[in-house]
Amino acid sequence: MKKLFILLVLGLFFNSLFLNADTASDYYKSGNVYGKKGDYDSAIADYSQAIKINPNYADAYYNRGLAYDDKGDNVKAEADFEEVLRLNPNDTQARKIIELCRFKRNFKNGWKF
Image (cartoon, rainbow, N blue to C red):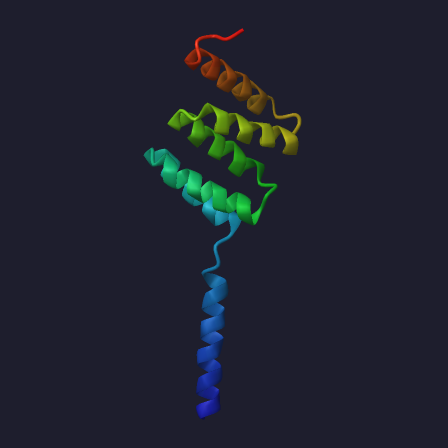
């Protein structure tokens, strides 16, 4: 009986580990919630976790880039959108946002031509 109880407890413990495991998608969705609330630092942290789990997660790079842009960090935003283009070369929206980031950066820096 004691062995059965121990096996049951161990089974529940290991099962809970796997059920609570955060996936890249979980972090991505959480980042979306934070982003909609305007909590860009938390959104960026969650998108970064999603990317850490899945380095080819183009949507996480895309949304992290948007969060960086909303914070005014055009350099990091541009880098994320460049990564989106590396993963999805035909993403025309990412290409347009890169140009917008460059425009904003040049505007901040006094239009260096």
